Image (cartoon, rainbow, N blue to C red; front, side, top):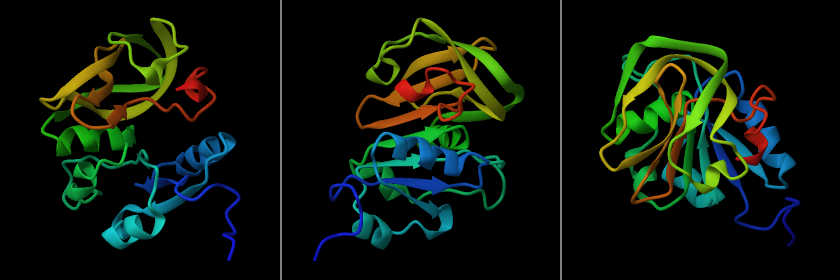
Length: 188
């Protein structure tokens, strides 16, 4: 029996929805790259969902909450230890840092077009100049990266704009690569 999906098996990117305004846009942008996506609400993310979908990667969306709020949206810890590549965007970036031992703080708000400086070259920034304009929309920010992380980019306000873990395929970006206001977002 043929699958109804127009893409190869295991080509699914799973997007975890934390209530962000751009979740469906993330899905659209990934599908424009000819990769099938499925969106799952954060509280529905289970081992069974991962085993059924067998995603090639997971993207954690943005969202309006703080990682320090009571009952803040989260993901199961085992997802970070399973070897599946994970990209956190905005709230997802903060959640990854928090879960992996980094610190998230309030106080530095960035909204709108913001300059970021690439401080460590990485394939996710292939085609990017040393400084680029991105779209930010956050009140909290990662103030200290996890211990085993490499900071890849910082914003003009000094916020950690991107990091990756040294020991596993986990990345976080504070900005929104999926919006047209991040001109090079489609190339990352």
